[in-house]
Length: 51
Image 1 (cartoon, one colour):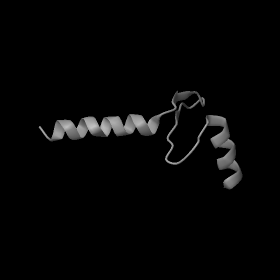
Image 2 (cartoon, rainbow, N blue to C red):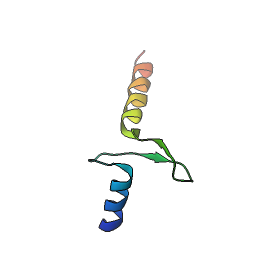
Image 3 (cartoon, helix red, strand yellow):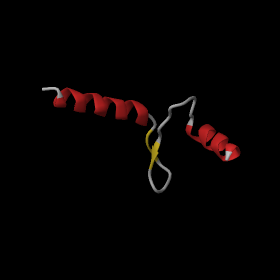
Image 4 (cartoon, helix red, strand yellow):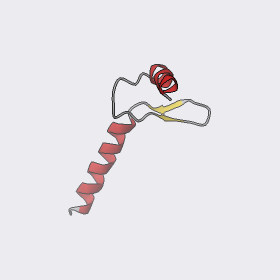
C-alpha cells in the first residue's frame, strides 16, 4: 500500500527507483546500496564469463 511504501522510503532514505536496501531480520541495514552492489557483482560475473 502507498502509505506503507512512503513510510519505509522515509525510514530507509529511499530517493528513487530502483532502490534495494538489504536489512537483517532485526531491521538493521546491511547495505544501503544494494542496486550498486548487485550491478558490480553482475559486471564481475560478465567479465569472468567472457574470458
